[in-house]
Image 1 (tube, rainbow over the protein chains, first blue to last red):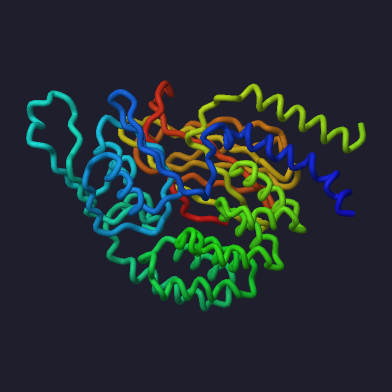
Image 2: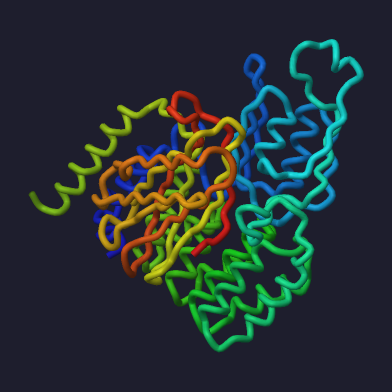
Amino acid sequence: MQSLLGAIYRPYLWIVAGLLVTSGLYAGEAVERNAPFMRLSKAGAEWRLEVRQAVPDAVFDYLGRSGGVRIHAAKTSAALLTATCEGATLRRIVECLLGPSANLAFRYPPERSTAGTQPSPTEIWVLAAGPSAADGLDTQHAPDAGEPDKVLRFLEMLGASDATQRASALSGLALLGDPGNSRIHQALTGALSDADANVRAQAVSALARRDGAQAAEFLRAALYDNDATVRLMAVDHAGSDSALLQAALADSDETVRALAALKLAVTH
Amino acid sequence: MNSKSRCKALAIAVFMTMAGQTGVATAHSLNGTLGKAVGATDLYQVTCSDGSGRLTVEVMDVAPAAGPLVSVQVLKGSMANNSTDRKDGDANYSPTIHTYGGDGPYYMLVNKSGPGSEIYAVEFHCETTNGDEHTGTSSFLLQDQ
């Protein structure tokens, strides 16, 4: 039976892997949704920063070390950042990362006025919070004084009888508060045992997005959920966890298996 | 042609297509999934840096090769655009859409036409208005369903 299933399924895995490649997800620089990646390069006068699924604090730290600039970030959100930014100066890179309305301050080297070209700052202060997804398009980069209220509102919504409300609350909590906020963490782990599968899936997603690699144990447990939506979410956030992905190849759901095959093709 | 032969033929076709696409730039690609719920929607915020004239987007329904169609929508201010991958299971993206919202943040939504989970790939980049130059592009996931 096993070999029969393998014979039937193997061509399908090849097709999925092929689709992945043709979709541009596996061509040299593989773009894999949940594998954190950062690279700063310079071609001629242009800086280029590629960031994938990284927390803003880590991006600023990397950019500072790699670009030779001190970056002071007062507070950033837990939202993972994916970006490709190019610019003549590191100022442009930071502005691209945080958007045009970011509240930034710069210190330039003393010879700035005589250089004749665009100098890079020696220090950058990120005065506003980092990307805060729940704040809306126009105000997302401004400091969010109402964030504690939003956290409270979402925590209250987790007690709603309507599963859609509970799932929405978890989606909101994924991007709010400090990454180490224990109240949010407890709420998310508690929702892993919710009666509704969409709520559990949102809890898995929120934990993965907030905790990164530290959420691995939750993802592995979610792979044994009785609903495919939850298992699909676990595989979606598995990153390069080959043990999880290998286990998912034997899943009873076709899409879960296909996603695991796709991710294994990218990461191995 | 029996089903096994069809599978092999499709696999060969896919890999021939792959060979033709080697070296294609892939800087702004994301893959994601949509859960089985009818209204499942992934929401991204894409921010285009100064000098951008438009956001260019296309989406591909990667797997399964059946079930609901996958679409992408882009919103900026009073502008909105939609593109749907109407042929499930091939290696082609949906028609490319351009949203001429200039620089700043855009919403990008990926959703589907009905129940059933989906794996998708979305390709996007900010460009100058006439599309002759890519500009700074950043994105992050707001909602993951």
